Image 1 (cartoon, rainbow, N blue to C red):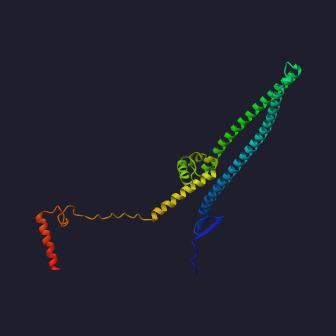
Image 2: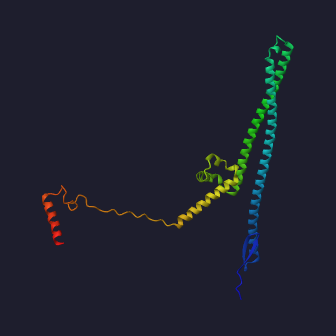
Image 3: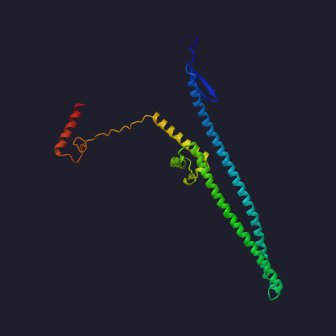
Length: 263
């Protein structure tokens, strides 16, 4: 007979838990409660992240829609201003005609002057409105960017607690590895997904680098052995050296002659 397994395993959607067959009901209930609580907490965290991302996307779409509407209205008003400016230039040209001068035709000159002042006043109103709309649009974009940064930081903080303190390391990593400018790296809140991936890439490279260092034993460099030469010794001097004394020369010559004789 096969020996019965000592444990029994349950699989809850990929999450596995084992219990000893000898466990009591109370022990199994306690472990199941802990296991279920962990699954629920993980599910709640993922659901919250999805909800935050959806809320961020909705807010961004609303802002984009508002900016598009604002810019569309501003462009329309700006077009009216261009039309008025063209009319003003035409009236000024008519006003410069000698036939429409105050001396030649006072009534005609007054009509042109009044109409010209009216058009200039309308143009000034439009100019001021376009300027205010452009300022408001710039302010809205700045506020939206700041809010997006803050929401992105909150999302990253939920995934990687303490990321704000770890950011200098991530910034150095992305600038040296991917060529991202330090200023662009500081705006990591705009792209929370990119910030998380950059952090995980950095940690992965750190782990693989440590693994490579452990697998390769350090090789000690072998120092080259320097040959020792006798500097300035008499034996090293050639027979024709001018440094040999007469006695040294005679001894060297006799020694060479004996070698040749005994060969």
